[in-house]
Amino acid sequence: MLQRQIAAVVDATHPFADTITANAAIACRAAGIPLLRLSRPGWSAGPGDNWLRVADLAAAAERVTELGERVFLTIGRQGVGAFAGLSEQWFLIRAIDPPETDLPPHHELLLARGPFTVEAEAEILAGHRVDVVVTKDSGGDDTAAKLTAARQAGIPVLMIDRPAVPPGTEVVAEVGDAVEWLRRRANNHR
Image (cartoon, rainbow, N blue to C red; front, side, top):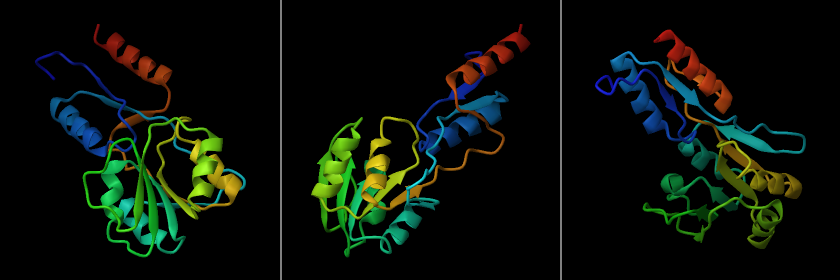
C-alpha cells in the first residue's frame, strides 16, 4: 500500500465478510494507514417481530433445534455446514450458488437471487410449512422481505449478529459520511 501511496482505505465489503475486514485492518495497521468501515445499518426488530439474536452460526445451529422443525435457512452457502449435523429438522436452504460443504440430511436446495417480494416470501413460508427462519443481520432492503413475511405469518426469526469490527476501526453507515471522511484525510495531506 505504501508503494502505491495509498493514504486511506474504505472497507465497504459485505457485513459478514469478516476475513476481508480483518485482513484490511491488519494491513492498514502495519502500514500506518487509516481504515474506515462503511457498513449499512443492520435490521431492527419492530412491533410484531419475534426475533432471537445469536452471536454466530454455531449458536444458531444449537438454538434452532429449540424453535422449529421446518427451517428456512437464508444465510448464504458458506455457512450451511454449521447445520449439517442436525437430523431432526428439515431445511429449505436458499442460496445463489450450491453449497460446497456438507448439508443437513433432510433438506431442499432453492437456488435463487433476490431481491424477493413479501408476497413471494410468504408463498415460500406457507408452501414449505416453514416454522422458523434463520438469517444473518445483513441489513438493507433487498433481502428484508423475508422478515416482513415471517412477521405476518407469526414465524420466529433466528437472527445471526454481525461479526465484531476490528478494534480501532472507525465505522460509518452512509456513503456521504465515507466521502466526508476521505475529504478530511485528503485535506490533511495537502
